Amino acid sequence: MTILVTMDKRDIMFFCALIEATERFCFIRTIDKNKPLIEISASPYYINELKELLDYIKKTINFEILEVLEDD
Image (cartoon, rainbow, N blue to C red; front, side):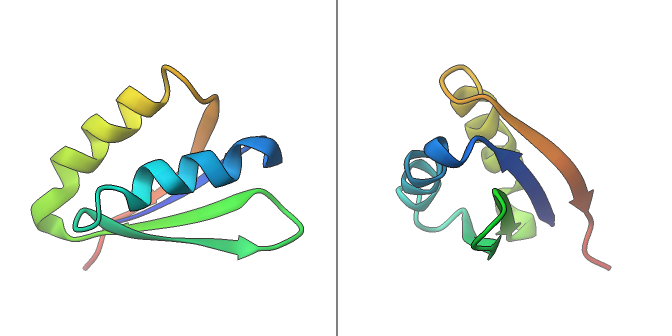
């Protein structure tokens, strides 16, 4: 599963740090250094945990999920 997320540029470092702290859930990368667009790729085994983590982070950081791409 891949999730595309956007947010205020000022929140990107904190958001990425929170996601990366989970270590095994997923991989995160910025797609364009000029735009606040982030790609989160998760193993199928951790999709539920990632969704719970994003719900928890949403209480602190305002972000928008643009697209969810399911792996074939």
